[in-house]
Image 1 (tube, rainbow, N blue to C red):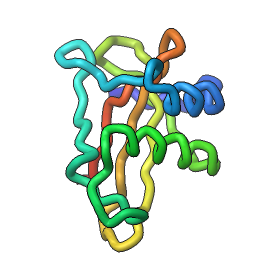
Image 2 (image 1 turned 135 degrees about the horizontal axis):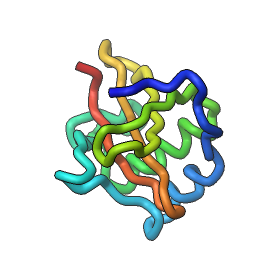
Image 3 (image 1 turned 30 degrees about the horizontal axis):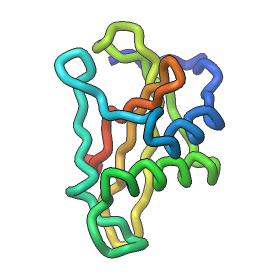
Image 4 (image 1 turned 30 degrees about the vertical axis):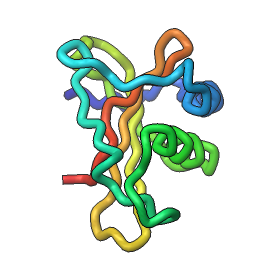
Length: 117
């Protein structure tokens, strides 16, 4: 894992639009894009139920729109791919939620969505 101090410009607005558009979002496909995408294992504090496949993307977009701090990381798989990640506190849960996404060709790709280990 390589962490870059000079983060490239984060395309926040473009990623929000893509996350809200079902034709412009997907989950990474192993082995080229390893992921730990487990929204069904995380309780959404707003509903008291697990995140749904659609609801997870709306929640990510909401977090980005709210201005959550986002960090940059260059991935090893695929090599050199820019990714962005953040941690969020969920009400009633002692563990943070870890989210990592990539954005390429106008598509947002989910790579991680799980409680922090």
